[in-house]
Length: 382
Image 1 (tube, one colour):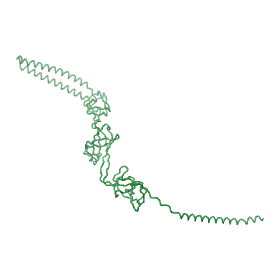
Image 2 (cartoon, rainbow, N blue to C red; image 1 turned 135 degrees about the vertical axis):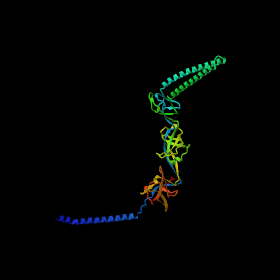
Image 3 (cartoon, rainbow, N blue to C red; image 1 turned 60 degrees about the vertical axis):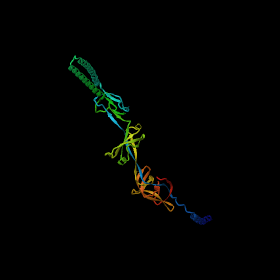
Image 4 (cartoon, helix red, strand yellow; image 1 turned 90 degrees about the vertical axis):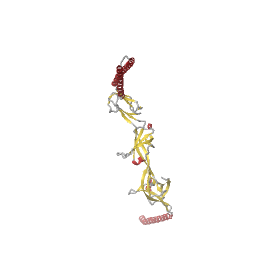
């Protein structure tokens, strides 16, 4: 019974001890917190955020603008003909094929001319007989003239023989004329090259019946090529006949001399056609596309700025961010501009900007007007 009483008496003492320990811990925590707070308040404040660096460009004013304009055209042959016979006949032989180079006067094809050749042989034989008759008539006339001088024949007989000689001469001339006509017809059975060039097409083969309206071959004069290009009315005024120009194609740059321009604006494409003579036709082919650059001067003062220096607002108005030096700081200021011309990575603008101004060249999304910035590096004039 005594042991039970002792155990009951010790429980209140344990609770008191735990309470004291909790209070002591709480007081210690307050002391540590106060100490930390005092230490924190005694430390110096952190440094302000760094000013945004920007890439800038120094711009210079230009008095005028040179705008390059490009015009395209095709290379064509100076002369191109579809060749055919002027007579109806059977194609006997075609001597050339597509791609062959021929010279002026070369025989390209021939019709069957056997009937005409037979007719010519007959006429030639008749001419020989008429020429023999003429010689006999001349000999007889000379003999009668001698007899007349001796008084053995009359004047009338001499005149009759003179008449026979005249008739014989006329018959020979008529025969020769008929033979020449046949020869001319035979020549028409030959198709000859009217100029030097390259065969670009062949439409018939041997044995076909050719009619006067049907082409046999197509001949292109590749030794003399020209470029036909359409220009705007303003650009055409800048051209000068006889001047050399550079034409650019997939095969390179070609020198061409302006041959002529038409003074008429084409109703379909509203351009004026100009014809250029290619100086080295062997370096380019017929049908190739060529381009020519014509620089047009525009009297408009302005500035060249990088594309990245342009920004627009909700109304679609363009601006550049100019840097203004205020109180030893660079402050961003929006300056409205108007785009005159764009070319590649640069834009030609006009606006209320002074010559030599410094603008932000790129990264406009990182800054706003009124912000203080630090120029990172200056580019040269655009």
